[in-house]
Length: 69
Image (cartoon, rainbow, N blue to C red):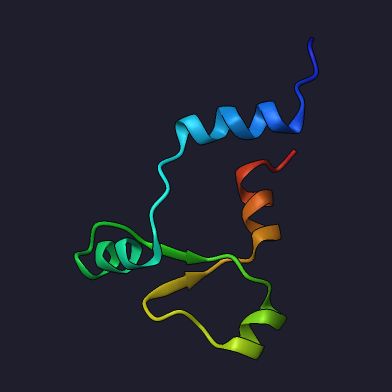
């Protein structure tokens, strides 16, 4: 198996992922076209507050849910 560089992995991922800005994201939430997930850790969330209409799942937990191995 060939080991890919981080640049290659990011490049391949960016070809598959559609990026949007904050205004587009909030419009999609407002129109019920998506769910907004706040992946910040609990301490950061406590310091800065939550994002309106978002669901909080920390990045670490998200990674475990997506790849339990």
